[in-house]
Length: 601
Picture 1 (cartoon, rainbow, N blue to C red):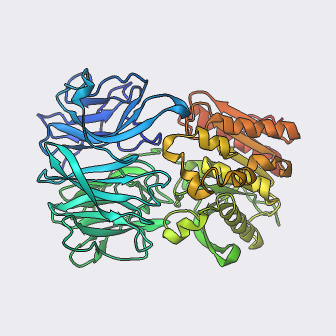
Picture 2: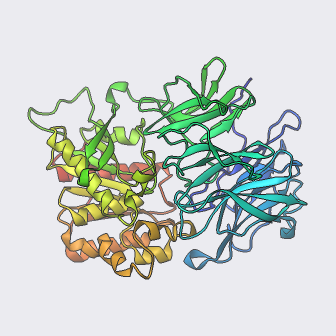
């Protein structure tokens, strides 16, 4: 199969969706009509769907909403007759925290007739607050999809539903998998009467075959104490794909992932030996080829194609085409530490590495605890130049997969239920102090940093322990009552499981919040925030900054115009990392060359 590398969309078009604010799958290739590939995509600026089919400019398929970006589309698939795109539509009838948000699976005509006529967009099914994975059967008789409702998150409790289609509309449906204390994701049709799906009913996200007629119980294809899926933070994730011969291409593991071919008849898995240990959950197949984004601790994330017959790999594009000399890049190792109450705590350790510098005799390296966001997420060992920025300058990193992280089964994930700000902090402290006790880190020069939920853990650790000499919060949560009122719809009830429901847990929200314990901070703090962040609004960082000012605690607050939940502009990424390095230098007792000095108030 020949392949071309190039851009389908000319500047300034930007394919990206805002559904759930985190977005997800926002494009769909169309069958070839001539020599040029066709494409449907969601445009970032107005969130409308557009079609590209060889014409000079994309053509709109959906109407311009009354509220800017008030109609958003994601997870598209082609209708059985090929005349429509079926996708999840998110509707906003207001702005900010007061907006009323609803979702439906809709059909959008490919002929453009709905661009000026909103009534031409058909509602196929609704009836739940959250919907994902619209998947019509090959014979066009049924639609499968995933659904869940507040206060649950999709990794807590969700359902796989199937409805019969009448004139392209679901009039009634039934749940075929999932429900109470079970997470179901990624349905795909095996045949007209059977679905594949990933469920954690065993305690691990495993693959199942489901009889949608009710003739038999769901069957685990290859039951293992391994994850074949992950948390649905973005719509359209794919951890497996159905091959033309009926076999399944699967990703599995935790911490490190393996690509393999699963035989659903026997449950056996033929692992494919590749140098990649983590994959973005977006694998796709065509004939005997698989395409995806993969990387490892020594290879940058890359768009690759694997020939399943020959096992040959073609790399189309790397996230970093030019890398520093290998001698300056960290080589992580994975360790398991003893946490409180005898729990295991998994972590990935990135020791400092620079061939030009040798530490003075008897001097141990300072270390930073990196706390991943989510908190229902993970942080596998990767070649990350942001990590190398610190490790090449003599600062080690320990990336802690604290209780609540994914990749280690449901029980490990649920250690954080009701314990956010407690278990995550305890595990981070236990891991880095074990590293210091083992003589790998300087116990007097430890810092902690994290973004979003990782920022919460950072601030909670600074206010609740004396383990750290400094802390950096990227758009972190500082208190809970205002956050619960201001954050976006997708996560507006996330705290029910992490802390407790309101109003019953009102006092716990106050007592657990780092903002309530600023008096207990004894070290400097760096706060960084995007001013257009709708997930963790700037008010969180600003309230914490004001409290630091009132208490006379050394700190710096850097706010970035035009940035949302995670910095994207190169100049802002550079500015934030240089500020962080200067900050650690001032705390740990060295002067980093070549970076501006960060002024602490």
